[in-house]
Amino acid sequence: MLLLYGVAMVIGLVGVVIPTIPGLLLVAGVAAVWAYDQGGGGAWVVFGVMLVVLVIGTIAKYVLPSRSLRDAGAPRSTLLLGLLGAVVGFFVIPVVGLLIGAVIGVYAGELRRLHDGSAARRSTVATAKAIGIGLVLELVAGVVAVAIWFVAALAQLS
Image (cartoon, rainbow, N blue to C red; front, side):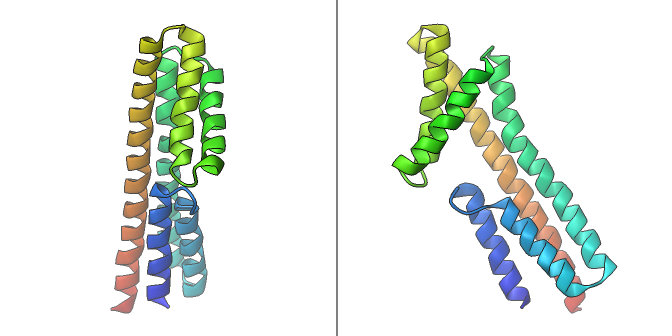
């Protein structure tokens, strides 16, 4: 059963990179089921620590791009266009369309705001880098959370 939990958590980590899988939400859900299955207070403490790490990773994923756009002076409408582009892109080009659509949406918003293709491109590149850093931070948070679970699961086997 332990192997099944581990495989499900790894699938959750893959979901951080491939947006069709719920990612960290899957890791948290599997950890909650594992803690319930274990039934002890220690398992719930492990789940709580994992949850804190996962929440921090999720917050970082959204705060960094938003802060990058805000620092560049972009209004919320640019961020909303990026979100709209991500949703449309996801359905037009499955999986990778989410990222492509988001970038196109941000560029469109910045071009509308700045009326200068070069400045809009610079702002979009800065935002894309921030999204990439946010994705890496989210993945690191997921790996740390799974590592916490793995150590706890090994300790219970001993």
